[in-house]
Length: 144
Image (cartoon, rainbow, N blue to C red; front, side):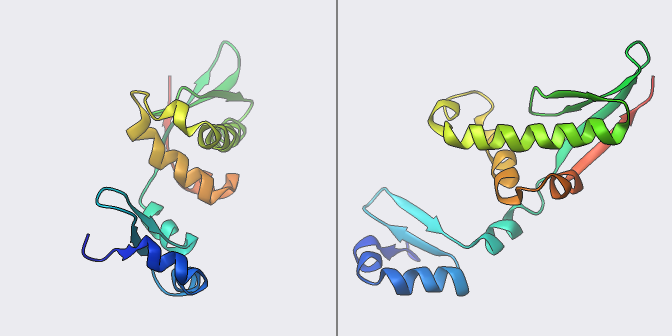
């Protein structure tokens, strides 16, 4: 990769590398012919993640007299006496799941939905705030 720095150079100038990543720009590092990674601060990562949205549906269940909230690409189902409570529970569930998912990333990587879920999980991890997660929800209210 043309823009990548050699990992040996990065090791020798570690403090300088970290300062440049934090205060200047992302960096690509190449360890060998095949292994390349990118290092960036959370500000740049947030810009990348900004366009990622969560598709949420909320429907009133007359039988249970609760609002049921679900999220595309996940199996989460949360209920609440109000739409807001159901959506809040869904955001909390996403944050909890994202932390567990990241801890067991090797377990999730071979799953069928990994490519869909990984960016959504990553956004939740760097957002780490239920209100800001809810701001990224595209909520569709389904009326029965």
